[in-house]
Image 1 (cartoon, rainbow, N blue to C red):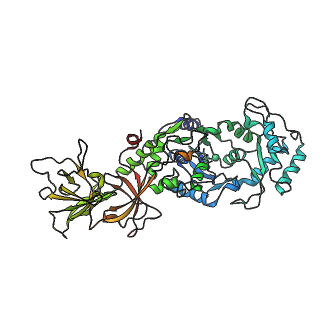
Image 2: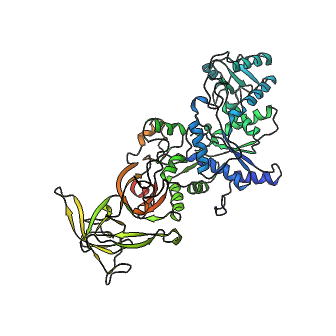
Image 3: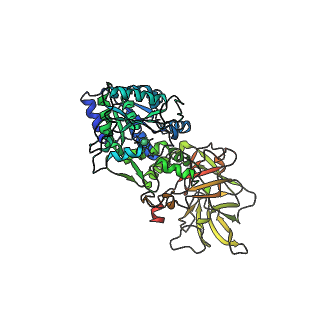
Length: 558
Ligand code: ATP
Ligand code: MG
């Protein structure tokens, strides 16, 4: 990352690394990000990516991208490709080639053979139900399987025949032989191989037995020389198994596992399974729907990699609960965009204004800079004409006290232009407002009107010059902070019916050639991004609202 990056926030993992490097335990660090290619990555994964890749950058170490591809039925090439795109888009690059747990299938098999030789693994014929029964509970010790005392020779033979496809799916498993009375259920002879005839995205039909996650993960880490294996807290109880496997096979490297708390983000969900449900049930348009907390969804909405990385920096890494309000993410994005994107005008809910004292057919143009603090962003011409669009919200016939926008008989400043007075309204037969009749004070271009103060400033567009655009106004996907907190209520109950509003608005002509993913501030409205899928430069213009200019959610919903 550039030297402009804000300094890293220290945390307990950095303290451990500092001590390991200072004490000479490691000469450098190697981390890894180990997603399962069974869905698109979400904002919680972004936290883990920023941690693992960020540490490698800061300590001049390495970070691997390794797919944990041990569940063939749920995994796909599409997911694997999307994950690589997401990591790169966030600004990170893994060391060397992408790694796959499946690259180690043969080695994993040989380590299992070693465990069998040592009497530390056995083939069990119990049914899954029986196995559950024998496992015991949190308060009750487990019981040994009747197959636990099989000889190494018999186990070697059975395991080889499992691999050769002699047995039906689910009829046997290979288990680590540890301790059925352990207080830690993960240590009660966990299954390390199962029989599953499923086509694998990498190994095809070469295997009909697949190693379990806990067994695979620690060995993959060790084979890659990982120094610090960082995962979320739910794996804390798996750490003894991680260590047991590595302590009992012949492998020179023993990475250490450290756990941190997972990110939970209010007003959304961070579970791949539930996100998949939203996609499958049609509640969103896909994994990349801009309302989704997926990385691809955030990208399409207009969130920036820098903003997401800054968010990760702010929420930090610890072992205590990490539930964060959406406002924290939104403000990181907003602050990043504030100094970086050009500002233009757009009108999302247009109301026509006829400027009665401005000559028909005449255009008067003024130059306006794209950013008040960044003259290097350049400038464009803002044309003014007899007919202009203003935001319907900026006019009220019966304004509340303190109203600083337009009302009949009142004045406002048109941004970069004249002071405008509203002289009257035009309504249709149904009494609906259709147009305002206004006049400008020709003496107010670039200067205050004489003898009176005009406080309000509104945005506007010349009707003859503005370009039509579809504007997608996104809001939070859920109406409650923790939509999946109640186990008896499906989280989809809490979907926000107003999470997407599509309007036909107008934008300045200068944005018409913007390529997809170009971001702007639409003055007074928020930050917007040209849609990656539907926006066509010079053609159909489609802008997504990334985030409003201020956090208005608490005010409106709190
Ligand atoms: P999900 O529960 O959504 O399916 P997962 O943990 O099963 O997620 P993986 O693909 O296994 O998904 O995750 C890859 C890495 O990302 C893991 O190291 C995991 O700990 C981490 N991770 C997943 N969710 C979060 C989260 N909410 N906050 C922080 N890290 C996370
Ligand atoms: Mg997982």
